[in-house]
Image 1 (cartoon, rainbow, N blue to C red):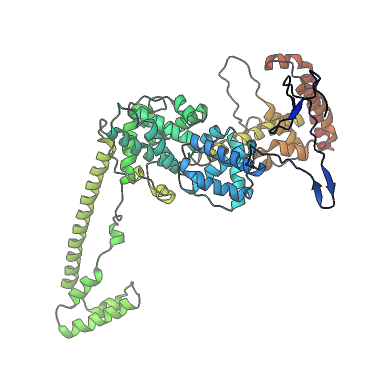
Image 2 (image 1 turned 120 degrees about the vertical axis):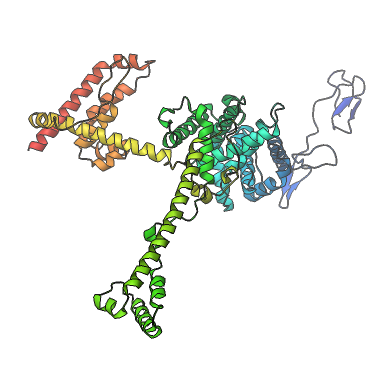
Length: 572
C-alpha cells in the first residue's frame, strides 16, 4: 500500500461504497487505482461486468424498457393535448402492431403517433381535423398525410368518408354555444341552417377535392353574419389551424352560389350581386328550403294521356235494344278489340248495325266525361299556380327559417344529390378547366394568325378581315403587350408540328421536353435564357428587365430567325 499524496501518511483505508482509497489523517481521496481488468476465455468474459442502464442498488432498467417508457410518455402527452386520453389503449395497440412492439424515438415517432391518433378517430367516425394533429405533433399536413397513408396501407384499412357535417356541429357548438348572450334556441337554429347550407355546398360540388375545415369555417362565418352574431374569420381560422386566405375563398364561393340561385328564381335577381347578397340571403335560403321540401305528386296527365273509356261507352250502347242482336254485336266488337285492331272499316261498322240514336248517346256521354275531366284538371292547375306564386313571392323576411327540410339533418350523399334546391351547379374545378381550355384555343388561333402573317404576308392580309380574335383588354394605365410567355410557347410548339389537341391540355413543360428541347436549333435560346434566369441580383421585375434588355432583344431576334427558317423549309 502506498502513501498519501498530500501528507505522505501511510494510514489509508478503502471506502466500502466507492472502492476508493482515503487518507485517515487528512481525508484526501487518493487517485483511482482499483481498475479490475476483464479477461476472456473460451466460455466468455471472466470477472465483473458492469451493465449499462443500472440505476441504484437492487434495480435493473434495460435500454429497451427505457425506450418503451419514453415512447408511451410521448403518446400520453399528445393525447392529453388533443383531449383524447380515453383513446390511449387503441393508439398503443396500433403502434405496437406497426413497430412490432419496438416503439421508437425521434421526430418520425411523433408523426407516427399523430397518424395513429387520426386513423383511430376516423375509424370511430369522430371528427378530428388533420391540422389540429399537426399543431400538436409539430409537423406540416403533407408529412402527416404521407404517414397516415402509410399506416392505412400497412394495416390494410378502409376508412369511412370524412364527416364534414359532424365537424361543423362540433365546432359551432364549441365556438358559439359557449357564449352566454346567445340562447340555446338560436344556437340550434344556426346549427340547422349551417347543416342545410353545408349539404347544399356538397350538392354543388364545392367541397369536392377541397379541404373540409376551410369550408366549415366559411359556413360558420356566413351563418353567424346571417343571424347577427359577431365572429371573426381570422380568429376562427387560427383556432382550427387553417389558412385564413383559403377560408375567404370558400366564403366567396358560398356567396356566388347564392347569387346564382337568386338570379334564376327571384324577380329582382338581375340586381343581386355578391355585395348585396346578404340583404337577400333570407329570401334565397327560404326559397331553397321550400324547394327542397317540395315533393311533387304524380304528374297530372293530359287528356290525350288519360284517354276516355270508349270501350265501356260502346258496350253500354250495344247492350241496349234487342238482346240477341246486342250479344252478337258485343261478341264481334270484343273479338275485334282482342285482335288489337283500332282501325274500323266501313264493313265492320255496318256489321255492328249501330243506330244513330246509339251514336248520339255515345257522343253525349263522351262530352259529359270530357268536360268533367277538363274541369278537374283546370281546378288543380289553378290551385298549383296559387301555391307556387305564394311560395315564390310571399315570404316573411322576419322569420324566414322553419327548419323542416330534410337537408337540415345529416343525409347520405345519394339523398343529398336527389334534393332540388333551385340550382344544379357543376364542379368549380371542371368549370375553371373548361374556361382555361377555351382561353388556350383562342391563344392557339391567335398564334396561328401571327405565324401565317410572317410566312405569307399577302394571304394573311386578305384573310385577316374574316377572322376575329379576342384580345385581352387591360384597364390599367400601364401598357401591356398583347403576347406573353404562354403565346411564345404556343408559337414554338406550333412551329414544331405539335398537335393542337395536345397544346390545349396545357402541359407545356412536357411538350417542350418532347418536341423542342431535343433540337439543336434551340441551344442558342437556352444559353441566353440561362444567362437571364441565373441572375438573382435584381430585387424586382423592372430592374431585372432593364438589366437584361439586350439579352431579351437577342432572344427575339433568334426567334425571328427560327420562324424564317421554318418558312423556308415549308416552301422547299
